[in-house]
Length: 130
Length: 339
Image (cartoon, rainbow over all chains, first blue to last red; front, side, top):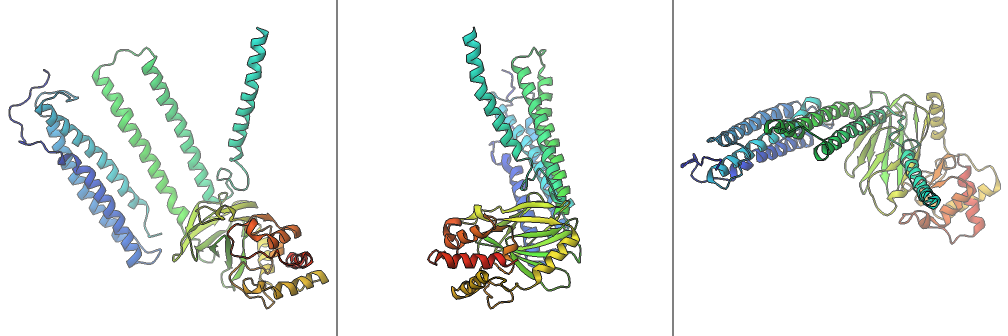
């Protein structure tokens, strides 16, 4: 028995929802950035109009998104480190389920952070609506 | 043994011929009038460089992964500790792809804004409308009256030219692979594309977005000329059509007007002022007919007039195969004389 299933875990009921927080933040960040730029260019400025306010807004969205992902990732990492178990957390015990879900949350947070950064990088290069 | 050798060489000959043909087919895409890999424009150069870097990078990554796979299955790799294995997985599975994708993304972002930048003020502008299935082309030189032509584009070498693109009914895409990237032509919107040819020559442009029955028959020749030569050509195109010089062409002009061609086509300097089809004022001087479908000559003109729907299925223009052969020949002679 390599795990030391703690008699009482920090969470009474393990939840799958925290697993998808980071990918959801990534999706929302992408949609908001896209829609903001599309509406701005379609409704408020001419074809070659400036993208300046949108760039600042997207920078703001990005900070908020990365903050939320960092929080969710830290939460996952904390659960992954719970107790004294080693990877791959694959024992059929409440403790390893807890750690496994934490580790998966942490990895998805890393992926989502890279994806949010990729989407946000575009505003460093594009200054107008063309 | 002899049998074995001869059998082997007999088998390998078709294989070698097949491989040689495959290589020839692959290499044929690397040059010619319609190849992104044989750039004749500033934008096409950037795109070709990007392609080669990506192709080279792909080969390096593929070889590295193949080598790692081989070592893992067959090689005598020293026993790995769990920690070492984890470094392999994190480094090769996460960090390396992230670094490569980031570099590609940044490079893509860096080359996009110059490709989409407008031409400087005072540059030649050419409005191109994607019709079903031909190209309405209007040259708009700075400070001069526009000149409307069709199905052929000529450009001065070394000068940025801004294309103003739209379409009246369905989506098309304007693409001259040798000169640069492609740009959609969308009904109700105006899109723009700046191209700068870097060498003279004759290239081929195409519609790159499926637009209906004869989408594949919607192309155009592109001629890049020296600046002075281009200006002289445009001045000649601006002039109205010349009157027919011989009796056959004269009969052709009469037949052209009698048979209703003028309802759709314009021949500047005559009463033909139709706007539905291509402007024919200088059609005899164009390289092709039917938007890049037939090489332009008398026989092709007759074929186009008599079998329009067979040459270009679904075309709006009705065929005139019911006319007597002599009349078709006269109309073809007239159109050929419009240089």
